[in-house]
Length: 117
Image (cartoon, rainbow, N blue to C red; front, top):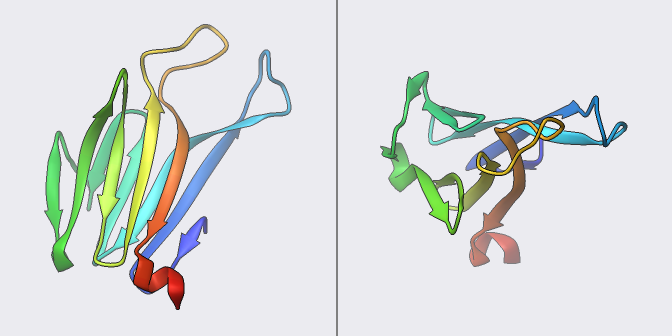
């Protein structure tokens, strides 16, 4: 996994490029387990326990799964009591060799108390 604590587990899935940047790989999906929920991020869609989330959803244990917007980029933010995960999605900027929906700039943020232990 990309990140694993008792509170949150994050797995990132990659796919190799077949044009222009042969040999490189991009993130194409993310699976997160937190608060007893299974969250999947694929392209510009987020599901929580199999149900599509259009804007935000409260999770057990005080967490939240939501769509976010930062400038011209869209993405997802999933938080729990101990950690938060953010992934931005390339849905506006693409060309023939850069397909829409690849995930970039994934970040896991551990709260200070967890980072100090």
